[in-house]
Image 1 (cartoon, rainbow, N blue to C red):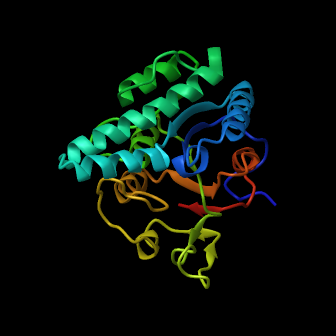
Image 2 (image 1 turned 135 degrees about the horizontal axis):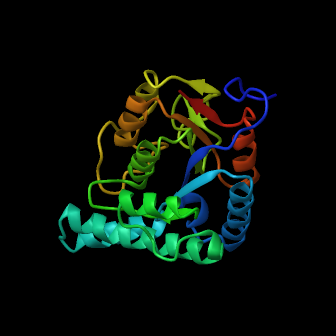
Length: 236
């Protein structure tokens, strides 16, 4: 059954895809990366405008830990994590070939320029103090995206952390107003790891950009979400 926000013939959309590092980079999953790049090419062929933001996963968090143990400031910890996420973004961009842009955007403006060339923009982190969730939200805001899809290591948003609480219940739909009630953190910190960053939520809520959280270990879920199928959790 299709969700009510897709009525009639499927139109092309502006989509920001947030690929969790916990999915494609913890550890590096080459088969998933290859499958995602093919799906991205298919969506592009159908006329959708796509921006992809890749997280740094466990390796980024490991560098944050190392930097912290060495006494480096939080800004420096974030800088290292950003470098890791950009390496993964570069890997995706090279896999996409001519469908993507050669240079990894280091700003929202550069990502927009890539999209204006008719390419798929793939980027990692941008600057210290900003998670890749927030990067995705800023890109979505700039291009007036129809939806932001986050492929993560969970089936969707739960009433509480399902990794710690067996009685956690997945929510099929959730309002922006109720979302903070099920999140553990309400402000950014280096290495934050939850279903959605609080700063990103503020941006998306202000613009009322729909969010679709889904299981990223099944790349076909991305296609299903674009088709409007009821999978994961929809936040609006």
